[in-house]
Amino acid sequence: MRKKSNTIIEIIAVGSELLTPYYQDTNSLYITSRLNDLGLKVSFKTIVGDDHVSLLSCFKLALKRADMVFIIGGLGPTSDDMTREVFAEASGKELEFRTDLLDHIKSRFKKRGLIMTSSNKKQAFVIKGSEVIENRVGTAPGLWIEDLGTTAFLLPGPPVELKTMFESGVMPRMEKYRNGFSFRKVLKITGITESRIENLVSDLYPKSPEIELSVLAYPGQIEIHITSHSLSSPEKAEKMINPLIKSLKGRLKEHIFSENNEELEEVIGRLLLKNKLTLSTAESCTGGLLGHRITN
Image 1 (cartoon, one colour):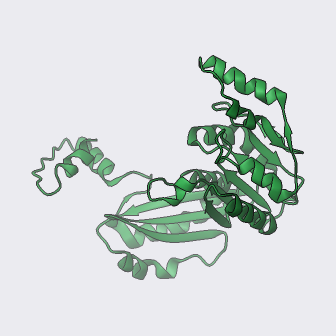
Image 2 (cartoon, one colour; image 1 turned 30 degrees about the vertical axis):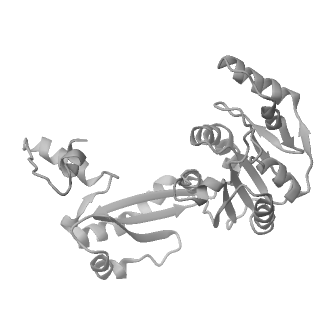
Image 3 (cartoon, rainbow, N blue to C red; image 1 turned 45 degrees about the vertical axis):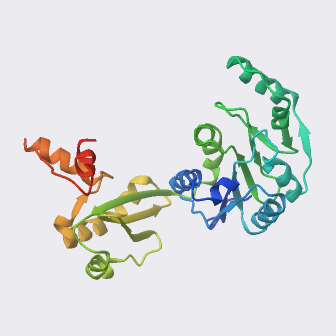
């Protein structure tokens, strides 16, 4: 994939469990954050179950519409782990067996005092033409493929494996695709409604595509996210949004309780300590939640 300013990036999270109300896809949030650090934006996010037909359709669509795709999960040893096999089919590639990877997987089990089952052998298959990304935590290697027209990363699903691999094996490879530098500031607000905030700051929404502002509502608080993008340096990206932040603070004044990603109870606790004050609570319906949040 050649470097360009409007790179179309897609993240695909694989796993039927992610289509239930019991599991959240936190991996794609992490990847999005790290890509944003490189000045890159994500255009599509897809969650797909462990089904051959669905996976094949999803992968083919991503290869058609995206310049770069990150596929998370489905690299394990069980029968429903088929990311590697189905992506090979979608891209017209063959799988090849790597004895060195099998030896590496065996050594992992040996170090842990475990016996490797025959099902783990499938993790030693890679897509022909791909480059292996070492898994320093688990047994499933990641894959990097650049000869498809679309650059593809196949990454393990367990968060600790994903993050370790992304930092050590993906970010260095992604540096050549860097599209500038981003800076992000979050203003946390309470004691005022989202609609009131909109009325107060609507004329401050940036006209420049290099600066983005969004207002997000959460239980008990509102957050204003300001993100800037500079092609030259992170310092310039930060400097770009300083006037906007100053204007927002002037409009919202005492309603802003944090601009350092602190929670409200953290701010209250710090103020109590600073002023040598104590706080007593008598709770019934909340079951001690207020006291717990402040002391915890």
